[in-house]
Image (cartoon, rainbow, N blue to C red; front, side, top):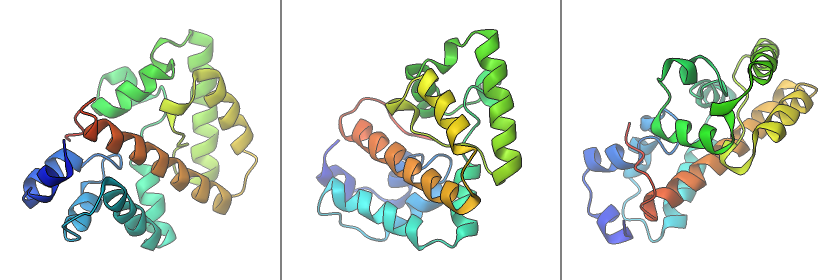
Length: 174
């Protein structure tokens, strides 16, 4: 995919291709379409980040709530997005032992109870042991810290998903 192709897309095409760069948030993609034309991939990415940063805390929490629990119900039921499945697989979360899965489920539950949104980490830049340790560690944070960290992780995920689109690794269609 090249920038000229992106800048020539209509709204529907743009949302179809980029609609999941922020997990299950095609409205973000739809909103940034109006910023056409993009001068670079970095410009497109910055537009996504600016939109996210402009949201009130409740909107940022909503973005985090769109993310699945790591190695959770959506993985077990086969309903993860293609991107999330690939990311969780790469981190080793699709091949956990029963003990690891149970520990992760308990930690995920504790995290959601404490913060009101799922634990988000860029799985593609981690592995299962790092993820479990980060989850334990981040449970010690306060809600505002976790909101900021979670959004920073969303941006890492978005960056890598945009790279995948432009390098034709995987589509991010919804």
